[in-house]
Image 1 (cartoon, rainbow, N blue to C red):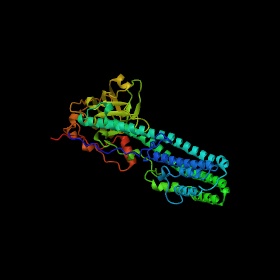
Image 2 (image 1 turned 90 degrees about the vertical axis):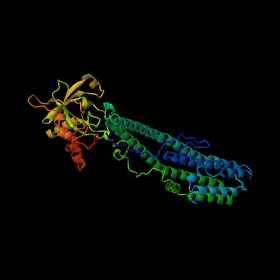
Image 3 (image 1 turned 30 degrees about the horizontal axis):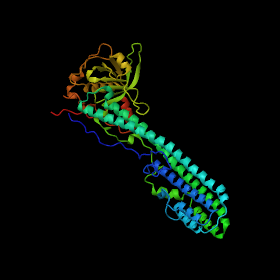
Image 4 (image 1 turned 45 degrees about the vertical axis):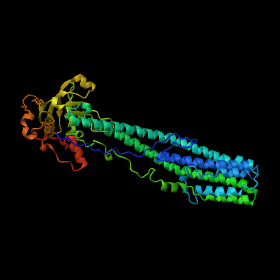
Length: 482
């Protein structure tokens, strides 16, 4: 018997957004700049080092006011090295990098000057930068704790989905090698629906995490504007204190102030977004949907129902007289499964009942009713208590009942027992569908009459209506080649 090849399509996944532990004292940062969260964390590192450079600079200037000219050389050394993570800043004039170049040149000119305002600088300028430094560190901790938790949830959801997809591959391979003989809980159809459930949870988690990252990115623009404004305030205060020492000092510090004030609050962020657009999250990116995701074995023959829809079943409780509606499916694994409904999202779809049809006895339909007698193999508590029982079904119409009966009969093996057990009182004449419908079902027990296949509905509404009525799905069944 020929088998359908399993698709080898890999599961789509988004760029990893995990964030390592934030450490500012290590020579090599643990953040991964190739991820969204890692890139933003590294940017905070850059701003923190930027402010730290300014703190060192102003602190050294404060000490320099009480010393001789040689102390100014120490000041220059505090900013002589390039900015750490300097690639985050635009190297053209008008940005943070240009400001630091201007700062170095003006400091060199101050080496021969005499500064007298040490105490005022210590009490007015340094506190502004220290507070800003703390704000950046607090912002970094918020990013680390918030985004890291979301990234772990996404990773956990993806691992759960991947494990179930691998289970689907195992059960699909088992179906092909075992000729379709499986246990009810190992049915690839059931595992396939389980994949959809876990995939739905994964998509929700990914979308939530994506929204969190978008919100963080939007907040970065405002925060960086605040950082630039505070730096401007600090440099302005420093300039006012140091400018009183002479026209030259005043001119040099005025030049530094003019340079930093010419940096627009959104200058660096705007150019940063252009340079790193391929690694930043787009707020216009549409949310994922389960229908658009492709994963291995989703089109496998064993995952396609031969017939499915809602049926009414008479309660097995002798004290109950009514019928209850449930969702029933006949799979290529030759199981008749009962589910509460057809929803794959709200809860994990597990069969309430599973009847292995080759071991069951099928009664001929009478009007819109038919019966199936067999043992429930769903491994639930009720299945262990009831054992073999007769199930009386009621379809929407007599035609639907006949379709269900013929499909159920066709999936039975050559040794299946299809007896004349009628679902109505005495008076109907039972027949064996396997023996009397040989011309319809063919020599192979797995072959389905082409007459039973209905055209695919042209609209989603018609498809849903047909499915609820129990219309046959096109599930090709392999035939033995003679």
